[in-house]
Image (tube, rainbow, N blue to C red):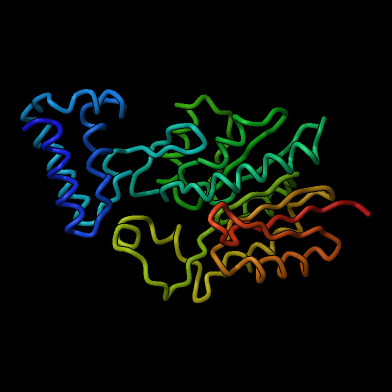
Length: 283
């Protein structure tokens, strides 16, 4: 079978199964280790039998619901390639906007002094590692409750040469015990309401602990409000990713917890309310 024939088969096969028909190209590029430009220039070439077999197996696996990123083993985030597997949430483009928003606020608020930053529920490490690589004068810590997730994050940090300290722990509990405080706290916690309908690609394959946030999706934010006052410095920034329609509730929680803070809700590129930031300053 030639390259163009394999692509045509995968596209129609996946479209009929109501899956992403572009996944075939991503999978074939992965197996051939080719850029898109190189692949398009190789459409008339014959595929080796072993490569074709593995490609067909992966197309069938995606039809059954396996995310393409898990089949490939990586996902792009902020211009870098991160290892992903079933132990971590697949990084989303919306989270890149959280990182961008945090970077711009940090540069504006902390112009000269060293910064202590923590990413809570780091998963693949995408947020923590990106901030460590994009910012100067920053000491980055990242936590996750799952050892399996931390293993992935550590491997990503090593591959990308990022200086991040990883700690196993439940939300901010490790720092309540150590009495450590931070200039910046960022998190993309589980925020999907328990009753929400999700595609099988997400629900059956990505870790549920990284997806669901209780009946209304806000359980983790409520816990944050109990712990944040003990780990934030007098001048600090808090940044959360939230689900669509949750910014008002999370903003009100932050304002109640920190009455003098400047709290703002930010929409993503698709026009959905997606981020909440709070800036704490000494009066």
